[in-house]
Length: 97
Image (tube, rainbow, N blue to C red; front, side, top):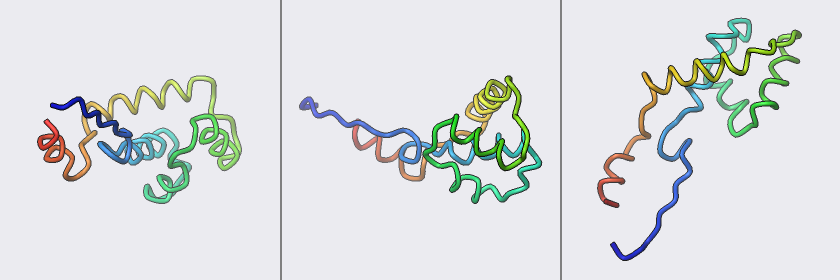
C-alpha cells in the first residue's frame, strides 16, 4: 500500500446501529408505541441526553437513574446478535485490502 489512509464514520456507513437503538428503546419503553422507522428518524444523530430528555417529555415521566445503563446493556446485546454491515461494505473492504 502507498500510505493512503481511509477513515470511515461507523454508523450509517459501515453498520446501521440506529435501528438497533430504536429497537432497544421500544423494548424498554413499550409506551412509546411508535413505528421503528419514525423513532429512528426522530433520534438519528442526536446526543443521548437529548434523546432521553425528549422521551421523558413525551411519556411524561422520568426514565429513572438506571435507564441509560439498561439501554446501553441492551444495545450491547443487540450488537452481538444483530449488528450487520451495510450492504456492499464487506466487498468494498475487500477491494481496499
